[in-house]
Every structure is written in structure tokens, then in C-alpha cells.
Image 1 (spheres, rainbow, N blue to C red):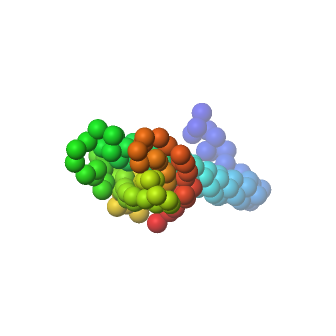
Image 2 (image 1 turned 45 degrees about the vertical axis):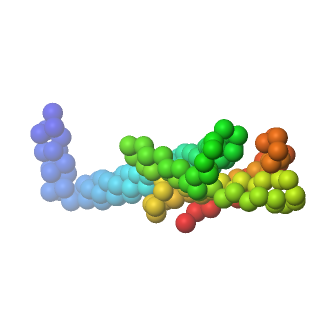
Length: 153
């Protein structure tokens, strides 16, 4: 079947009646190729965007984990809370860096600032910062806010 179709195309072109057919076929092939390239780029872009959104959410979760870690140490630990925690998964590393300020913004208050970074030390690193004000005596949360919604390095 394919051979007979090829013979018909060759016969048409020998008579110079089918040169338009060959031009149309070439144009359709070029259009198909361009369409394939555009779709491929679109899918790649969407995949990167989805991965970036996942990193943004994970950096928020790691920043929250940093705040919770400091609060646990303040409530139960006899030693100084850590300045950072690191999370190492198979595909990426995350890090939360915590800063503790006593008597800020006023006497008897403690401010914990936690910065979550995912994937840590990468070109796609996302960063989220959470600031929490707690009562130093009761360790009750008085204010919990996200300082930056996102930061891309």
C-alpha cells in the first residue's frame, strides 16, 4: 500500500502536475515540527512552574518547623535552641535558620524569626520568612505572621 502511494506521488511529480502537492506536504511537515516544539516548551515551562510552587510550599513548612523547634527548646530544653535545622531528602535539601530576640518588641516578649530555604544552596532556591512574637513567661503565641511571601534568589 505504501509503495503504491509512493509510486503515485512520483508519477504525479514526473508530469509536473503535483509540485503543489509536494509543497503542501513540506509546509505541513514544517508546521507540525513547529507545533511540536511549542508544545514541548510549554510542557517544560509548566513542569518548572509546578516544581517551583512545590518548593515555595515546602520552604514555608520548613520555616514553620524552625519556629516550632525553637518553641520546644524554650519550653522543655535546658540548652540553647539551635540556630538552624537542616532537612535532607533524596532530591533536595532544606534549611530553616532561626533568630531569637529577647524583649523584642517590648519587655517580656520573645521574637522568633525563621527563614525556610528550599532547595538549599540551589539555583532554584525559594525562601519564606516567618516572624512570631511570644510571651516569654507563658510561651503563648501573640503574633504569627509571614514577613515575606516569597523570595527567589
